[in-house]
Length: 93
Image: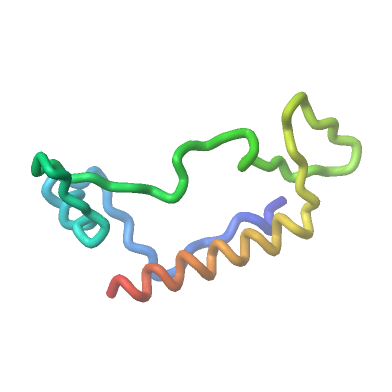
């Protein structure tokens, strides 16, 4: 599984941003309610079991309500996520 561990290059880590910094980062996604409050909608509402996968290995038994993913598929998905993160960071510069 070490193949899944990859560095994300050109990544900017924001450690403990202030409320003002968070608002600035999210401004492009902000919608104002009729009461003047900021409102944000995310694509992922929560981390549900339906969207959670465990990379399976030979002899590994999945638990109740757990979904498995073959290592090859996990590597492919991992590469896709890293490409996405790289693209997002590039477009934010």
